[in-house]
Amino acid sequence: MTAAHKVKITYCAECGYEQQTLDLAKALMLEFGSRLSGIELIPWEGGTFDVSVDGQLIHSMTRDGGFPKHAAIADAVRGRLSA
Amino acid sequence: MTIDRARFDQGLTYDAYKAQMTRNRDRLEENERRVDLGKEALAAFRALPRPVKVVVLAEDWCGDVIANLPVLGRLAKDSGKLDVRIFLRDQNDDIMQQYLNKGQFKSIPVFVFLDEDFRELGHWIERPASVTEVRAKRRKEIFAAHPEFGSPDAPVDQLSEGIRVRLQGELAKMRDETTKFANAEVVRELREIATRVAA
Image (cartoon, rainbow over all chains, first blue to last red; front, top):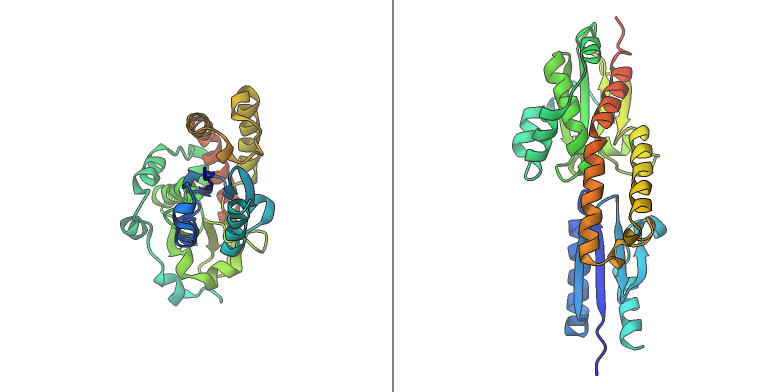
């Protein structure tokens, strides 16, 4: 049975981060298609831009600063897919 | 670049800014209606010896703009002493670069107070530190009172959707309860800058 792999993007909805959220979601959709079971977009607040893959926090704006490089998130997804 | 008369005149008036908003205008206007400037503070603005110009950087998606720009808007309207011109942050990066928060963040709103010769009296960014402090304390109290919300530092995506919605509700309630304090702090800080204008 194929394992389900999910990406969650939590973004500050009061900070104008919609475009970065959509860009990242689109990049993941185009690269991984149905190999991901879902991409969840969570509107939040407080300057948040967090990305987790299968519950593991890959990027946090608070912790790591700035927006993530798409390649870093894609690498993390690839790592989960091949695990 | 220095803001001169020609550049100042390119900015939007408060009403023109509201007219071009594509979202959150209802929230901004609700805050405008709710803000209580206080008689003494309003009298201090009305007593300014000369009108003060205020350059504003804003965007309509920003929560701090929605909360704090209406305070400035009401001060301008009710005192008749502030000439406000608003510039969209993402179309005016040259101004933004002069007023980065902590020298690196493009935080908004920015209010730059200028005298009639366009000399800067002072500027104000985002929100009062006292408001950030009070809300951080209240946020910690919410998490302490609701163990189901987990750690305040944990990623929110680890919470179930139901818990997340409840947390969002508690945070919104807390912000609402601290709005009166926040508005009073904004008025106090803006008054301190505006009253630097020489008699």
